Length: 329
Image (cartoon, rainbow, N blue to C red; front, top):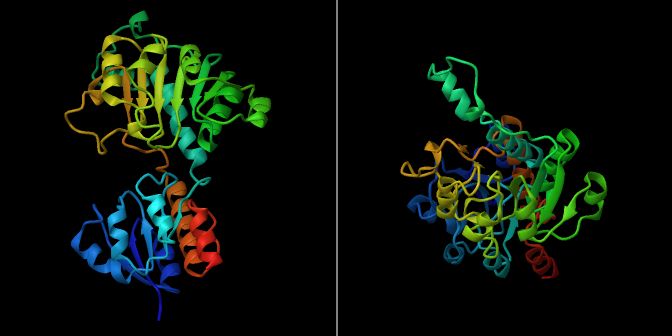
């Protein structure tokens, strides 16, 4: 009898066919919540889950006695109760590497757009208000030669730093990461405490994963340490930045601008002032949203799930302890 998979992610026909050759696949199109009655009803017979953007609370694991693995079509895994999954011996797989360069492209696009006021000035032209030469009130600032501070220096942070250092001659500083001697040698990067990085940087790009330790890591005190001319870019997770404190800092001119791809509430509330602020570039969480990258992420998740349900080690496993427990057993 084939093992059963519940799919609530965007998979191609070829990827669904690949899964269906080995497993029974039940699809949930447009699943908004794990509390969906049909999804809950299917959980007791599920051996694997594959999807993204749906939080799986720990309480549901007791309803899934056969569950062996979850393949998330994402690099972040804050939607999943990792400790509870590990206790249940359930493997959690993610999709690092394949989205690194694309997400770094998004981060650097936000750096460029905020520095040169691209959206604001494009809107000026669109409205028909470009009636004379641009004056100093519309000038932006240079990116080349400036100081780029990375809050978090993992794969994505390093990829943003390479664009800055090698492409724009930027000085690179990093914090909230262990020492990276090879990247220091490659990019001239220097490690700082977070406060020091905020003091020095012209651009602060946030790339740390979300955890209890990083929730509201950038708040009122941290924003106050940034230069009034500095720009904040967040391509990590929305709750890493205290959004209310950020709005106030932008309104008061404590920092110059912000480039945002993530928010504390997604989709962003229509009542949020952020999209209407001229010193904010607000994107709808498009970090990895290209055809090529999303397909590669989905394929990695498919490969992870097939390996996990076949008793082999997945390519990308978050909770190695669950594998060790299962393997030892």
